Amino acid sequence: MKINTTIRFYEELNDYLSEDIRRQDILIDTKEGNSVGELIYSFGVACAAVDLILVNGHSANFDYILQDNDQISVYPVFERFNITSVSLIENSPLRNLKFICDDHLGRLAKYLRMLGFDTLYNNDYDHNILISLSNSHNRILLSRDKKLLLNKKITRRYLVKQAEPGEQVREVLEYFDLKKNITPMSRCLECNGVVQQVPEESVKHRIEKYIIEINDEFTECKGCGKIFWKGSHYDSMMKRIRKIVD
Image 1 (cartoon, rainbow, N blue to C red):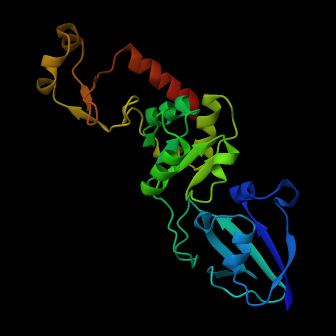
Image 2 (cartoon, rainbow, N blue to C red; image 1 turned 90 degrees about the vertical axis):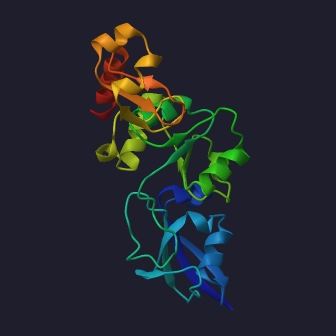
């Protein structure tokens, strides 16, 4: 026996769908006894990418058995909001967002690191490595490659729309509401390691004497050991950060 169901997918879940059914109510006939999870999967949408299902306005999980004339709304992973008190799905939002960029987003990765966000990047990563690291480290995979992001194995993803790196970082900051989480120059631009303040005595044997004479604050990357101080390069990057944020 067939039953009538209306389903609608929101935000980036539409990237899984063909263009003719995106961002609209989809009326579909389905078999009696099917679950909402089976229906969602039939559209090619990865269940791991779903954070909230509403059936007739009420939260449901993937095992809910469809009834005639059900109205279903399907929402993606809410990285920006904690909805554990509402959703019956076991996914939990990331409270400390971490990213991984594909091989075409190297400058975006550096911008995100400059702003203090944990961001993996290596232009040698192939698609399998990107997906594996994204899932195993709970990192949001950032890419402009729609085909890559349609891979059902990916748990966390975001399709970057802008082409210019400065606009890309603004897009990511806006979408994930990250401006209040910016901690400038707290990560190494080269290796993504955490940068922490260190006493002058611990680093003075590793840098030129004239630098010691004109600086009294030093930081060191815990990953690669690189030493930083507030010279002209630091001032230039801080101006760039203010430009991005403003």
